[in-house]
Length: 256
Image (cartoon, rainbow, N blue to C red; front, side, top):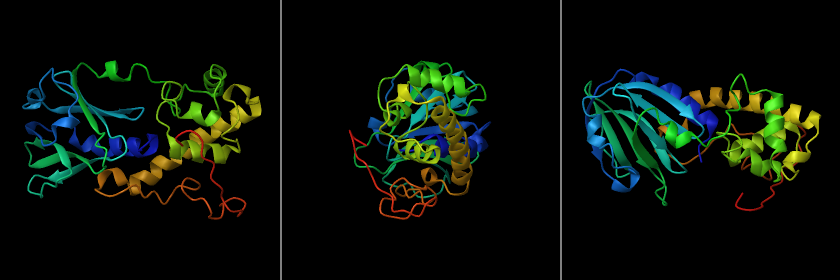
């Protein structure tokens, strides 16, 4: 599933849609649309005014104070295209702009979990339960310590709990824990102050680096599977560690 770095890079890329007037909307796969009021046709004549990420959500705010909120889940892709470009079977929702360009939400996964919600206001109703953003300047070591202290689960589980910390999933929690030198099996509430500090630094460094890497090659803008070659440990079991050169081992617990 796409996580904070890839989604932040995608939100940056989609800033080019700001100011564009929506001339038409096509829902090619009705299951992708999770709301019915206001009607999606209300987007016609409106314009994208703001694009931002919150957690794993992309929020496209309009001039009419409405929000198209998109969650890509595992198989979702969101790409810009010329209106004349061939529409694929994967394309589930298309915004057609008056300037002859499109924004296309596609679903390449078998489970069809991508979701679009069209709501009044800024979309806060959809993201109100999310935890803090790890790259927020105000999210210091003390904030991380407080978040971890209130959870009894393993640190890996807490890092991927969207109500504890927004934006991380399986891949980037692996990257962060490896960089911090913290076992994924440790109870979150029992981390030492040194481990919490190392984890906070790793969050900042890994996620910032991930955004930079995703800017250059973001699979979310292509109709292709997830092939993030820049990840240093995730899905690299059996390969040599970049730090110590030992063979990387995988631990599976729960659904991860």
